[in-house]
Length: 255
Image (cartoon, rainbow, N blue to C red; front, side):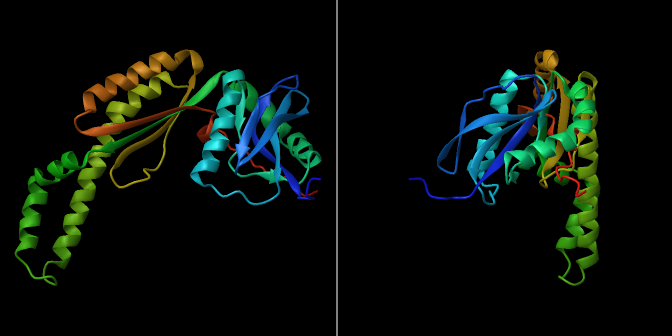
């Protein structure tokens, strides 16, 4: 006999469809669960029944979510991503949410049909960044003046030195944006330069592209990498659904 554990409905993504699609099973925290669709008009949520609790964004859980969405993307050309960790009390609640979101989906479906998101992070190699700072005459002059002073006397010089290094780094970010981001933006339907997520990151970009353009886009990424590979590392990822280009408000309006 099964224990009376409270279950909830975990949602992965929304799709445009007019039938009950099948996307296999997922493993969530050691339990195998079948996915299913909850439909409204020509929209559906891909969901699974799971134990009702808070799911933490641990690596394994995030990979489970991404894996499920990737499987949907292999079969569907219009996928609206839903962020990780959304669990609802019942299928009726998800159906109500879907109906509530439908006006947004009607606009989004044609905008993202046949489109995928690709991510590119450009990270400066430590040796190259250090060499750039060292070879900058102003920074070098300032650094040597700091060296010869006591801790307190060199305080303002050190602040100024930090400011100079920052200015130099901003210059490198600008150069990468022009050299790498701009040519890629031309192939994309839409492109975003997000805030860098680490101190050596020179570019943190997302691109929305037509699936048919993926090969051409890859080629451009390879050309840019060829040009910059001695100075930076490229972290190229995807295809994803349009995470950075879709802003879905998930809360059902209390009414």
